[in-house]
Length: 124
Image 1 (cartoon, helix red, strand yellow):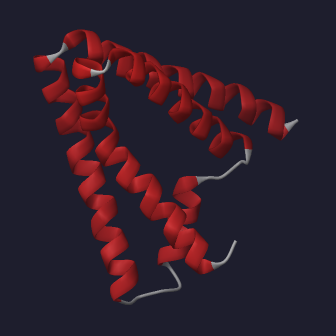
Image 2 (cartoon, rainbow, N blue to C red; image 1 turned 45 degrees about the vertical axis):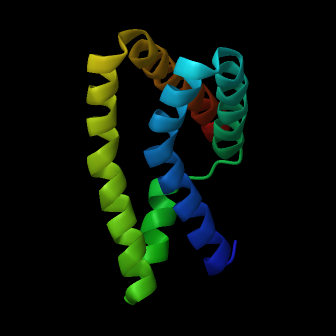
């Protein structure tokens, strides 16, 4: 992939990480059926990322090392913002809507399990 496509992919993934909890909360509270449709689509996207063997951390490191400019600085700030806000959003969700919190945790665990199974198959 080119550097521009790497940058776009990283930005999309980082913003998705930040925005998916508030989006899921709104959908879960007001549009139950749409919530489950979005969950299925999101899981499909995650499976595509995993199946294509895209290592986000490696991509992030490769992209930031050769570029020490404003673009990579803003990407690094977005990454830091994501690292800080995601746990806070999980904690707020736990206190405000425990059922949604456990659904989100189950989705994360499912992603982790699928990733482990697929990474074993890839290494063989």
